[in-house]
Length: 121
Length: 108
Image (cartoon, rainbow over all chains, first blue to last red; front, side, top):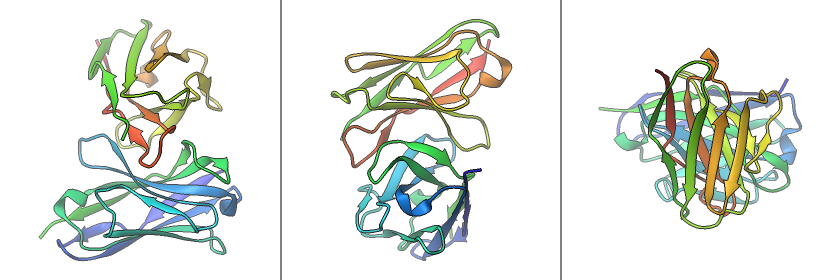
């Protein structure tokens, strides 16, 4: 079945870096755009970034642009989020999510279970 | 950026009763509106897309409707497993993809 499994979360000091991974299975990963969405403790959902099916196009939320980089390796069916210059307000559960539409962007139809990032000194 | 406003923040409903959740977009999003359900400690799950199309495996008691920039999620007869937080999301004007703040459906 379609599955997304995130990893790489942890506790990190402000200003440091962390890289999240999302392993995909059960679908043709290289056909779909992929998103990162986060949820701060007790808060709602915040879209973070998206990457096109071929990795050529990337978009970011204003809150992370210039600090976070989304990438993918279609040969490994894996999505990444490189997070630099981390701040306390980046503390959240980070979900990867598959876009529903082939070759473009729409909504998220499959979500991973999430990985927790805590930024604290 | 399109702002999505959900109401109420909390809805107290008895099992078996109908629940009506609202979501308003700050400008037109056409029918490009999705609803997600999130239970504590779990990832969001897609319920509705295209404002009114149920996702695969979603029971018929969940329905979505729209009127201009106003969207409604109706749960016709609440089951115990339906108590959760529900989010609406627009995917018409991106980036960014924007979510409402959520409506918590709790047991009355």
